Image: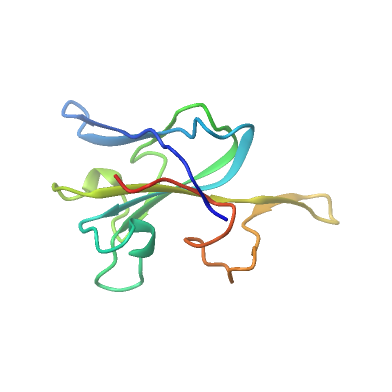
Length: 143
């Protein structure tokens, strides 16, 4: 079952650097986390932002950042420099307006390959690789 946790969002707009920045932490989680941290932005409240990212003209915005051994209580900055988005590539290019914001961590598992290499990948947890429904992922309530 997915856990709905409190996520701290601070949206900082700096006119001097013209950069949008989001700060995220999961204070209710313990230990180190691996995965893809997704910042989801929606212009409407028809559904949670995580259910509105599609491959079509009605899609909402998603920005991602890969995390490796992230201490969950430490604040993670999501900026234009460390994220990549769809359908807009950079946070700095988000059109002005009001948005519903949600964060989701799509957890990765660590695999030790026979050739000695270690890879971290999202494991299918019975949901058919649907990142927005995967059991065990951590996500916030939309704000």
